[in-house]
Length: 411
Image (cartoon, rainbow, N blue to C red; front, side, top):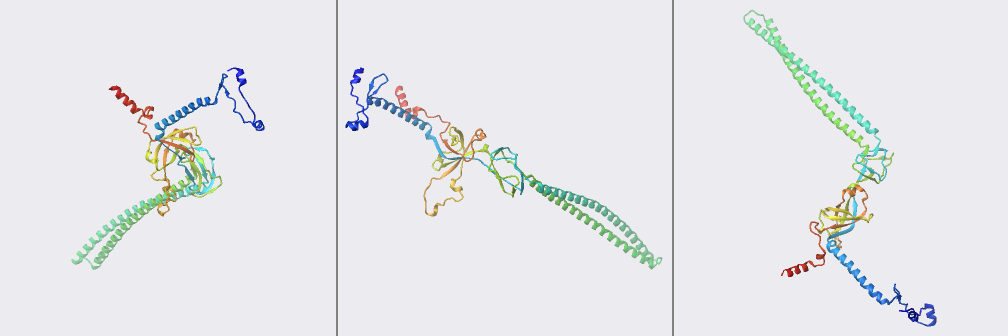
């Protein structure tokens, strides 16, 4: 088209104010000029753009449909999931004034590191006192042992006296028999007979006395041995008291039971703490896991070992691959402080949630960026990974069509 034709074309362009003053109707804008100078009507431009939009929409829809068929329909997802860890609240085992607190908030500690110390003066005195009592008791046991040895010698002496008394009794009995025989043959006197009788009876009494002395000495030996056993039992009790005192002394140094990060520190040097006073919390980030609360209508497809995609809200650009570790034996409501009672007559059905524990890979947990309490989104892959992934042909439903074509070609 020539420039004169373009100039001759009616191109009335007025502003709204001018059109209002002149009473004229606002004319349509001039046709757009193409890149090469050609004038294209607006309808033709729309006709070219619309197919492209429709084609792009069909492509996007097909791609999303394929993704759903291949993967999406096998996913069970929830955003009611949080990072958890088996954190421990560290408390004082013994009472006393806090001497030192060598750690600060949010610091990493290793197992065995000192978290705080309590003044141990009283507990050291208790250990020294228990040790002194044990030493005293050991001296008592040694003394009783010496008495046992001495009593054994006394028993030997009593037995020797008994043997002497028996020999004397035997001699006096023989003399009595001789004196009585002489008396019967008129060669002895009555006085001699009486003397022999008295000597015999005195010797018999001496034998009885010596026998009693031996019995008494042996009984005393048994008593001393019993006292020795009792003293050893007391020593064992004192040993237990010493062990308890040493144990209480060890509790004055509070150490980390495992590797973790110090949090919620509530102890300061100079503070007096009682037994059970909370000092701080220790969070083992290396043992972090995810607790996802799935609807009861979703858990029928879940089982331990399934792959899970974890997306932390705090690190949305990062996806973590975990696995289902276990499923809770009851819904979360059953473990609450006041479980719901649905037998009261006022019943409203609510979809229950069941906690599912999801394991986080150890190498990811070691990085320490997953902190307990963070929100995450999880997707559980319920498709059997041992089976091949569905192809595009099966996704479009063309597998049966291709099979029929193959059969026809074979005929």
